[in-house]
Image (cartoon, rainbow, N blue to C red; front, side, top):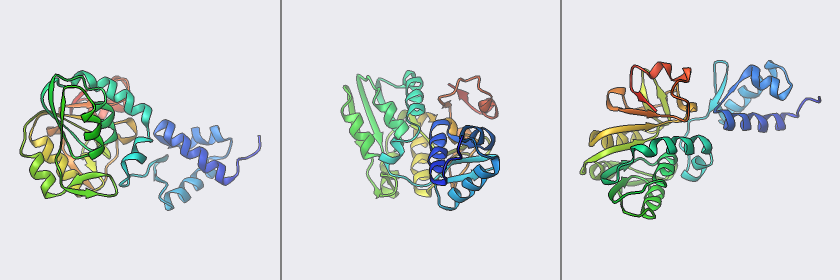
Length: 249
């Protein structure tokens, strides 16, 4: 088999990253029919260009602020699986909070409420909520963060903190057994911390590519998180570091 051209290898490596949530050197080399050294060099170059983040043994997705639409197209199957599992936790009345993540958006689309107030710092997620029967949708306001499409800052925190919620559903840029859940911006982390402080329970929605990672700003430590929902089978050994920290679905 002929060796793929560099541009083709990069495209295929990004496909592997999208499909598996990570690139592992040896399996990727076998799939592309090239040497491990070739894959390692490609990953180094792609890391320098910001296309991914190199880690020991391979690479993971670059953790950068991204627009809602761009995030929605990433790991969509995993997000849909998480939403289906978390749907059992959705309240039908009272009030619930949702962050600005596309995973929360997937979950909101499954709401079957009677009299539920949904608060969010996402215009996109609020629009999804408005289309669900029995739901009153509230946007907390604040400063529009153009890089992510979320609403942040003092006004967002003030409004988010003025209500009480039965549950807060949130994703994260990264999830680490020691560092907790973290975000790429301090403002985003702060809004999530405010929502969690006013919720009876906080449900973390995180696909497997987020596990074992940490980024700039810690939003919540494990004492503030009640349930972790991933697309993985709860018995998957990738979840072992979290078993003593949180309930896992």
